[in-house]
Length: 222
Image (cartoon, rainbow, N blue to C red; front, side, top):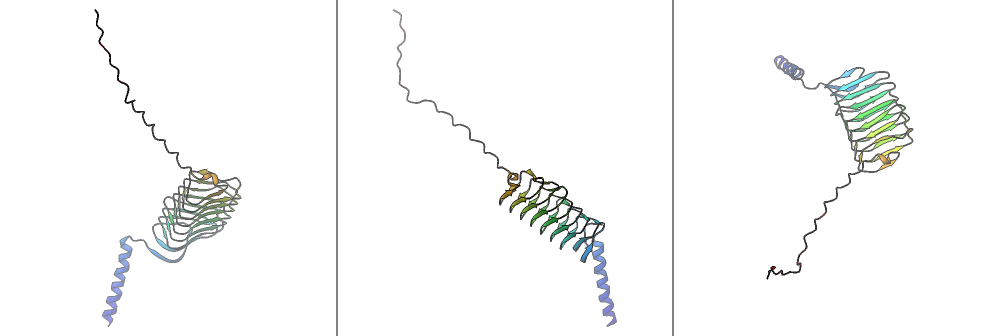
């Protein structure tokens, strides 16, 4: 019996060592408190605590990323299966071909820049005080900007839902957005205009036919 137990423990040890040596992403359970950088690892949830800065470089987050008071998040090439939620944060930057399975929500915070991100849900900016931008994104839901005071730029996005802007000072700027739903209120003029089709070339006029036949006699000098 002792030999069987020794053999079982040995096999488990070899398997664990194989995982470390294979270079596969390391899975960490439960919530990770990020106060520095995370690389190409897989985690459940990420929380950026008060006054901290977290950078996600190619990180797989199987849950939600929460950005707390005065905290900053940079996500580059990250895959986030849940939401990105920031409230009273300093800055939220999500870009460099990241994907978000849920929504990105930035509320009562400072600045935010969402660029080149595939977002299955919504992008929501509400009551923020510094510059905000949503550019070059593929959005499965809506893009919404409400009551922001630091300026909002919304440009070059493909939005499956609606583009909704209200109560922002100044009004949002940008354009060239493809909106499958409706562009409303302050963002009504930010929807791209389809190009004017080029008119076909005029049809050439055919030469006249059935002209009367004229018979000319040769000139003869007598």
